[in-house]
Picture (cartoon, one colour):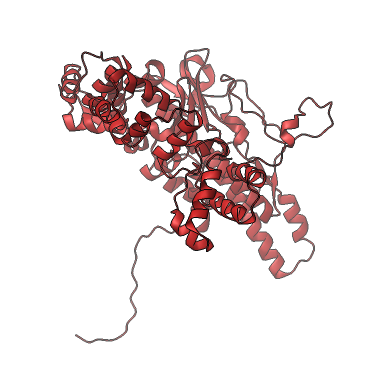
Length: 519
């Protein structure tokens, strides 16, 4: 066979991930708060993008309702129930008509350019009026002391954290310059819980001072507030707090040296080691429970992150389920095509025109991607509500097995699309706020083989059985298996043990000791 270069013409299919398609996929998996940050960066870099400051128009019949409760629902997108009933998502005419199927066809349909004068994203199509769960407006305010929004606490610019709190005490308590240097190093060496993990020998070597001086300074700073900071381990932390309460007697010291036996609830061995009876051990353990094992967290300075749902679900007056996006956390932007046309007609150079063209295309793509994202989230959330309607009505024990393929097949999307939509998204339901992935659970077969049970509902049932057990009748894993099998749940003992350990439920032996001690 002759070897040599030659030309061939071949035809093949390949998925080309354009930058615009990558952007649309990226936006799909962002939460509303992350999406706002992304849009803010785009607003800063793209002069043709503007924030839509207008108030979203709320329609009188927004949300998701039974089709038979709304005579005009026949012209709206519908999702069928297994029994033939339908739920309908409203459409006010502003939503993109290109968003109809899976992410592959949906996002590829966005390649066309929009030449409209001002293209805007308005999420009022998904905003209903039946929840009453509005989020607080966290924007700033203007005005003087007479403004009803005035709050002096909002003026605070700095929060005192643990290390600052300890440095204030160091400057007042220790006057020796060397002691202050050692104390400052010790403060910088503690973790967020207040523990000192670096050995004192290593600290003395680093600072070039005597070990005795480091130990003496450590003893002084261990008296700082909050009590228990600068401890070397859990036993030392509890001991510092008990010493401050004048309760660190020899029996308590022996108990703190055997915290592993406390964790195992081995009361007989603890009574022998501490030299006291079971009643005294119970009193000592009660005192330990009142202590703080992580004193530094009280002044850690970490901000509490509020969980903000992306989708609201509630009952409406007609008996159907009402779905809406959380529009208060969604960005609303528009494309200023008039400004682009005005600048482009002033005889700009080639580079300027190319820049404006890129900005215009990027802005149009962002608007379409945001609209597509809203529609896709609503479609996935709608199907989840349909599949888990019994859970919403009756509780977690009625949660059904569900996987990505079931939802994807029902709404004609790809599994990867559903997976992206359910990432970092939360749904507010009458039973609480849940991550969308919470509704996807594995199946456990029934004893008769005719139905399946959700793994989450089985875990809930195991917890119910453990919480209801009596002191004289502690349920072993084998006994729990028998009860579940009698309830038509085919489960193995090792699965029960795995679920129990995942929920941090002690073994039957440990529970028996604990309940006897608390009885």
